[in-house]
Length: 192
Image (tube, rainbow, N blue to C red):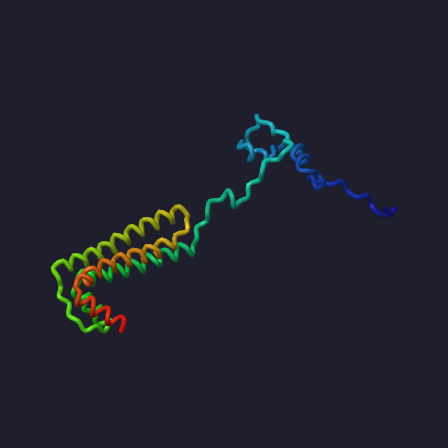
């Protein structure tokens, strides 16, 4: 230093003090120690313990935090459930009217055949409608449970939609396959 300069002032407010020196100076317990041991900072009866030779493993925030909600998963799940509900509600009337369903199916496929409605065919349509309705209710309940637990859920309504529609489609084919003339005409129309 030169003669004209004044000496550097002493540090104030613990600028160069270590955390331990600062705590000793202001007589405040170590917050880290209190958090690690689960004790209150306001408890003056418990002196801070000296640090151990092996520090406790530090948990990352990702390990301690609860799983954050997956916004895209929720949106996809509710969209698929909504689409499934719309499909179920619009298909129940057509499934309950089995002869109308078969006439529409044959018209779409371009098959010129007559379908003689057997007495038990209506039951198969009602069974298919019940499978779709109850399947949607079960899917919605399972999806809701998984969403509340924070699990990935979008695949549940997608898979259930495929499974329950295949089951309902199989139920709707049983009366058609029981009529050999209609089945042969349908197969001839498909194979062209």
